[in-house]
Amino acid sequence: NDACSQLGFSGDEDAEIAVDAILDKMGLYRNFVIQECPDINNAVAKNIDIGSGKKERYILYDNDFFNKIDVKAGNDWAATSILAHEIGHHLNGHALNDEGSNLKWEIEADEFSGFVLARMEATLEDAQSDIQTFKYEKATRTHPAKADRLLAIEKGYNRGLGKTIVVEKIDDEIIKDITINKKEEIINNESEYVYIAVDGISAEQVLYNYINSVGGEENIRNIKKLKK
Image (cartoon, rainbow, N blue to C red; front, side, top):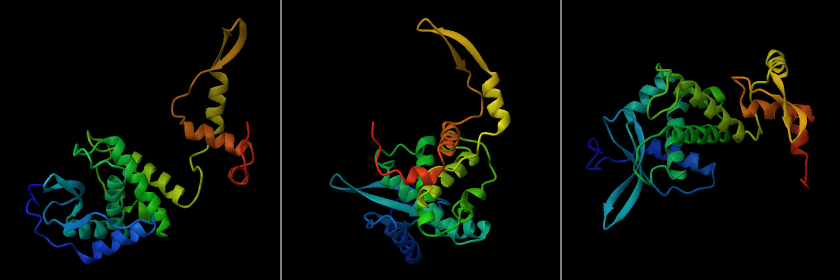
């Protein structure tokens, strides 16, 4: 807000074209202002008080920042992915309470960015190219770790392609660990085996194995009706 308090800068035509292309893939019209804001070295989604108790939705961006990111990434998709990320903040309502960033919101915006870039026919590498330029790998108070952000973009990207689930398969060694790590307990007066959770296995991986066991994604997609 300090860097762009007067909001006296004009929007860049290329940025507006990119934003409209993003929204077109969602079937939406632009209902926020795209505002160039030099020297902030970033892009941000903000709800800004415009007087009389009214607020306007803005995406503020530094065009020099976009240019530097594109050069680092080696393509023109990096800046587009950042704009998609900020649009994701607005569409998910993250900017409404003006609380700034948090880990959950950043992941949601990253996933949205991946989804849109898939619809825009970018490659996964293109969609992740902005995050790949980050040198700092660990999570901060406001932003997730680099690996988590890349995974969120990939998840959104695969949704954009219409894929139901793409995760690493649980390998045979882990399955063996699950089988070995079990114990017998008395439940409801009956002896039952309880399997102990193994570190590093996600719910998505378990679902992946189940989907494969019933014939794969194509079989799931061909189901016309689910009935109890």
